[in-house]
Amino acid sequence: PLYSSAASDVYKRQRITNDANAAALGEIAYGNAGGMRDFIMVTLGTGLGSGFVAGGRMIYGHDGMAGELGHVVVEPGGRQCGCGRRGCLETYCSADALEQASGMPIPDFFHSLREISRHTADTDTDEKKSSQISQIWEDYLNHLAFAMKNLNLIIDAPMILSGYLASFLTEED
Image 1 (tube, rainbow, N blue to C red):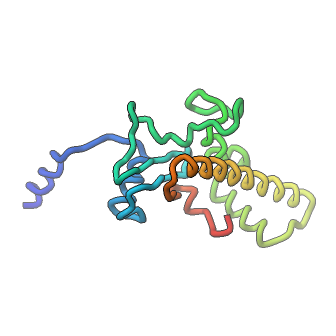
Image 2: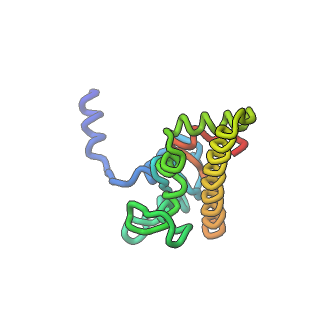
Image 3: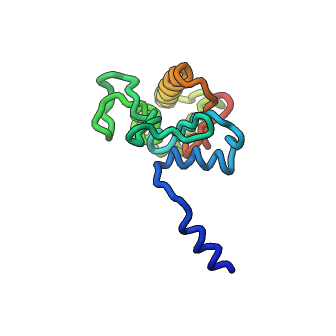
């Protein structure tokens, strides 16, 4: 019986999609989006992905490329992106961008950021480093807020933040 059940599941309709769209579908089936007909999933990981759901259906667009928030240009002529464009949101709002700007792994970056908010710097060097880390984080949040606010003006729907970096976010952020 187990074999026949598993075998029948293999032949069900399947679709290949990207990780952000899969995360949105997972939220519908198992997470916070159960019952939601319209929402935007934003995945904050090594890159920045997104999936758009409207009327209870994933929006793929004509060529399957709809909802690529990470490749919306937020700084014309800005940082080089892996897609070939310059100034894409994911070059400012991703784990890779934070690691590149800070020169430290993500867990260390957030540890330092939280320490800064708890303590004052002991030396000028500590103060300079604290200031740099705080500025990197402020720039990240400003770019993300800018993009999300503009997106919300276009698509009036709730947003769900998920992914590797989301686990480091606090209410204060």
